[in-house]
Length: 472
Image (cartoon, rainbow, N blue to C red; front, side, top):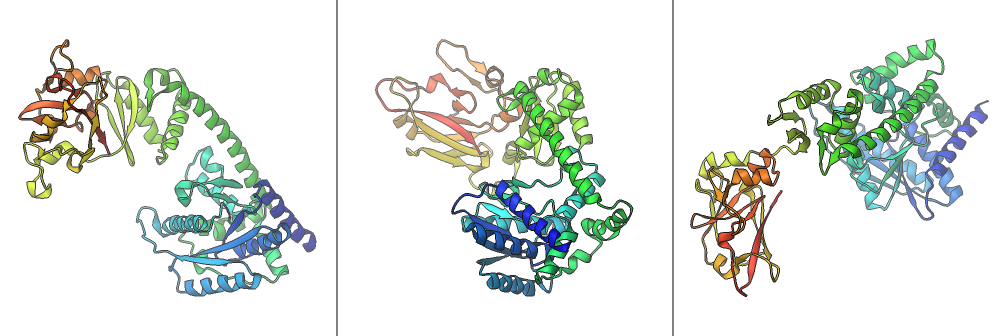
C-alpha cells in the first residue's frame, strides 16, 4: 500500500511539472526551507530533473527570526550538496508592520528574495512545496475572514505574481497541491529524507498554526478526507471567479472612457455587477481590494451626490473622485498649493511670489516644489511658439494660480479666465490645483493644462519653443 502511495506522489508531481510545459534548457528553481514539505519537493524534483535532463537550482531564504536559522541554512546547503543540486541562500531583514504582523512581513520578504534569486540565475519556473492541507487551511482562513470567491479560490497550481515576487518573468508552480501532508510524511519516511523542524510552526498565536493544530485534527476526525473536498470547493470557486472576471472585463470595457468610468453606463448594470466591475478595476490598477462595506458606501456616495458636487472618497492607496459624471482613481499626492504658505526655510528657492528662474536653452527643468518638469520643445517650422532668444533674456516665474488670471489662446479668440479654459478643456478641479503658470514681468506666458498666451508668441524666422508641463 505504501509503495503505491509513494508512486502516486511521484506521478502527481511529474504530471504537474509537465503541465507547466518546461522549455528545453530551462532552469527550474526550488524554494527550500529545509522542512519536511520542501525537502520532499527537492527529492522529487531532483529525481525528475535527472530523468528529464532539466537543470535544477535550490534557493533558501534566511530570515534570522529563529536562533536555529544558521543551522537550517547549513542543513539545506548540505542536503543540496548530497544531491549535487546548486544551492544559494539570501539573508533578509524583517521589518515588522504592527498592522500585518511578523508572519506577513516574513512572507513578503521571503517571496521578494526568491524572485530576486530567480532573476539572478535566469530561473523562470519556481517550485514551492504547498500541498493539499495547505490549500484546505487557506480556504478555511479566507472563509473565516469573510472573503469572496477570489479568496476562496485558494492557491493555483501555477501562477505569476509580479507584485509579490517582483519578477514579472517568473511563474510560481505548486506541483504538490493535490498531495496530502500524510502522503508527504510517508514519502519522506520511505526515502529517509532528513529535514528540519521550524519551531514557529508550533506557535498557535499565528492563525494558520492555530487551524493546523487545533481545528484540522477535529475536522479530520469528524470528516475524514475533508482536505480533498476543500480542494474541490477551491476549484469550483476558481471557476466561478474566472466567470466573474470575464464578466467584469466586459462590463469595464463598456463603461471605460479613457482612464475613467462613465457613471451613466455604470448605473445601467445591477449593484452586484457594479461591485464586481469596481473590484476588477481596482485590481487592474494594482490597488488593494476594498471591503464590501467600503465599496457599498463609496458607490452610494458616487451615484447619489448632486451633479456639481466635488466628490472625493479616500482609499488607503488612492483617491476616488467624480467629475462630470465620470469616476476617476487618482494617486494620493501632497497638497502642493499649500507649500507656498510654509516657511521659506523648508523650501529652498520657493518665494511667496513663486520661484524665479532663467531658461538657458535646457530641454527641460525640474520643479520639485511644484510637482513636475517643465519641457521646452522646439516649435514646428510653421508652428507657434515663443521666441527662444527673447525667452532666454527674461527672468521667469513659476507659481500656482492665485485667482483672476486670464489668458488669450489666439488673436481671433477672446481673452478668458483660466476657470473658463479649464472647463473648456475638461480639466478636473483637483488637477487645476497642481497646474502651475509661467510668467515674465508679470505677463502670463503659459498655463499648464491650457497652453501659451498668444501675446507672447514669436514671429518671423527666429527659432521658437513651446512649453509643456509633465507632472510626476
